[in-house]
Image 1 (cartoon, rainbow, N blue to C red):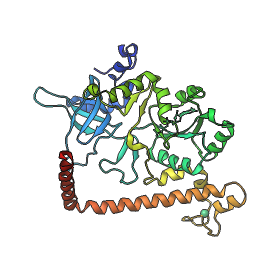
Image 2 (image 1 turned 180 degrees about the horizontal axis):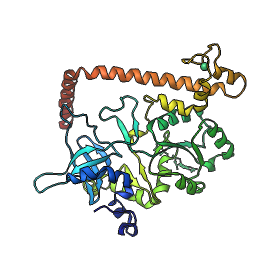
Image 3 (image 1 turned 30 degrees about the vertical axis):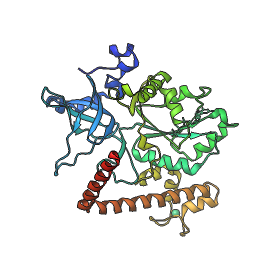
Image 4 (image 1 turned 135 degrees about the vertical axis):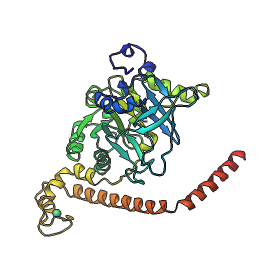
Length: 371
Ligand SMILES: Nc1nc2c(ncn2[C@@H]2O[C@H](COP(=O)(O)OP(=O)(O)OP(=O)(O)O)[C@@H](O)[C@H]2O)c(=O)[nH]1
Ligand SMILES: [Zn+2]
């Protein structure tokens, strides 16, 4: 039955840890909402990696690779993605295990070129903490941080800014203050994977399912290694390059952290763009949102309207012009993403043509393979 984290698994080695659902974030509330499904003979599992038509799931009785039943024409069931909780029909002597339902997502990180709610466009589900990772080895780029925070807030998870490579920065504290000024409502932590500074505070601040979001070279992998414990990732790396182990060992994008919580690292998350982040922008620029309620016009765009409280705050020195410019720029980017989505939805209506091109692609691919 259901293992709790204080079961016998706590004393066993790291690969056994993978066997408990609690280690993967299963909680009492999830269990309660699963009652009906359990009664129907289904078992819960969490998707540790999803591919077309097949997912790697961890269940109470170990890892499974259930098939995903394609939704019927009338069903509006999402395709499972990394982080999803699913209800599975267990394997029988004649049939393999099947994912029957995707449980309601508490949060979702959505890709920019896709619309929320439709299939295959959610990059990560049920994320609790989005850690925006920023290197202190380079000058602080506030616009970049604001952009990632907008995405983080929009997902529904709690954002956190993790400044890395403090050992490469002469004044980490003032850099942290500069970042805190553009991250209202988010905790800002200074760390160094090299010296170990700030890592305990980071572990304490992380909760539930954690995603590390940040540009290439920011130090995400290094930080992830420190959080996971080097042995675990080294094993994963060895297995990934060891041809013999490839078929038996699934590459996991979702790994329990030794101090609690789960690290979610899915390739698509690196370099994700903005998507319908209106609310996320409002939270990222919380002080502008507050000021805007005092603008004379309810739809004030803060670009020169009379009675604009936001522009007045800039004149009074309470808000930087850079901050408002960044807000405008991200709003434009968001609008472009929305327009792209509309174009995509129009394209969806041309399915027959799409299917044709897919067939052509498949034929070309099979030719390449033969060549
Ligand atoms: N001095 C110093 N270097 C660090 C620290 N953390 C990471 N680095 C170095 O920064 C470089 C990039 O780190 P990664 O962890 O690979 O960065 P990443 O964000 O995972 O990059 P991508 O995988 O490209 O997305 C590596 O050479 C690390 O050794 C740190 O705390 N101090
Ligand atoms: Zn205004």
